[in-house]
Structures are given as C-alpha cells and as structure tokens.
View (cartoon, rainbow, N blue to C red):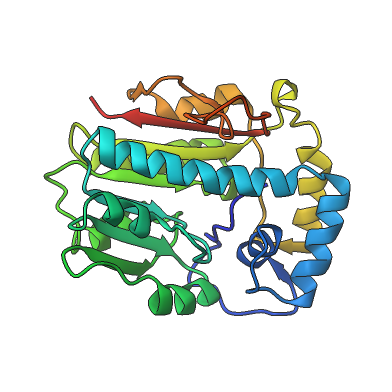
Length: 269
C-alpha cells in the first residue's frame, strides 16, 4: 500500500468517520494515533493482504538506512521529506541530526492530524533546523517555493518521496512532479523513493484487490505501479548500488525477505 503519507487535494479536513491512510499506516506499525474506523479497515486489508504490515515496517526501516547513508556516506545536510506521515520513532530529522547536528529538514504533508503531531513532536537540534510546511504533493511549485525559505537550494538536498507518488494516480503527472522538484535542487542532490508494486517478482499481485478495497472504503485513493514505471522516476539520475530493489533489501544486513515495495536512492549528476 503506502507508508502513511497523505497528499489528497488541498489541505485536508479532519474526518474521523472515514479511514485515512496516515492513521491506518500508523495502526499497522503499532502506533496509537488512529481511530476505530482506521483499525477496522486496516484489519480488513491485512486479512486480504497479510504482508502489508511487513511492508509498513520495511518502508520505515528503509527510511532509516537511506537517511543514514545519504548523511554519512554522501555528506548531505539538507532533507526535503515530502509526505512525512504521522511522526513515530526515528524520524528523518532525528537520524540526520544524529549524524550531523546542523542538518536542516523540511517536512511536507497536508493532513490535519499529521500537522498537529508534527508541530508538537518534530523538534530538532539547536544547531540545525526542523520545519514543517502544509502543502500538497500535487503542487510541487508550492513545495519548492516554501521549502526554499528553510533550505539552501544552492547546496545538495535529499528529496524524500517514500510512499507518496502512489497517491498521484496519473503516471505522467507523477513523473512531472519528480522532475519539477529535482529541477530545483543542484548536482549532488539525492532522490530517496519507495513505491508499492504489483510485480509478481516481489509478490505484489495481492496489492491489486487490496487497493481496490481501500479505494472503495478509505481515503485518499492509491495505486501500485510496475517496476518499469517506478524506474522511470529515476530518469536522468544515477542509481546508488544495488539499484532499485525491494525496500526491505536495500543496504539491509543479512538476506531479508522481499516485500512488494521498491526502494532506491539516486544522485543528480
């Protein structure tokens, strides 16, 4: 499915009568910021597609490994996390500022529950900056314009798009969003991305009926994509080894089982 990111059109209004992705994802990873309707839909989806909880955990673990890699190995000190979802443990700013306390992080989301939690919990080091902007993934111009108030787009930025483009149902629009944001950042910037797939090679066939149920019973609507379509988001970038793989296996210790969610990190040449 996704990873708790919430990009529905405009600044969303709180509706506790309909299951919402950020809260259901929070439920799947063991959080407490969800309602009965989220638990009910979450349980139904998990019954149809039991691996969904594994995907949720794998996506979160990927975030930690990718942020550490970009901060430690590539020396990036700025992060634009688009579609942060509900804060849990080990958020982007905590990992990055542990590596380099002067790191600057801008979170982007547009869900009211996420907004409240982010402003309360997403506080960082005195040396660095942790900011939150209320904006929609469908409006990359607004994201870039507002993020530039905190980030220096003359220096490399890690653009985080974890489980967010699956809410942009039109593939051409999703590619255009990536191109627009990456055009604003300089050489040496990175794209960190995960996306659900229906590819059978990763066991993704079950995504299709589960997402159909989701789209009929929850919000916002969601889609999976083929590996070929997901790879297109990295056009013009240089993939970091091992390339685009199951997010559970990217730079992971041991040999974890794959989940049907691709993950990759790429650099802008």
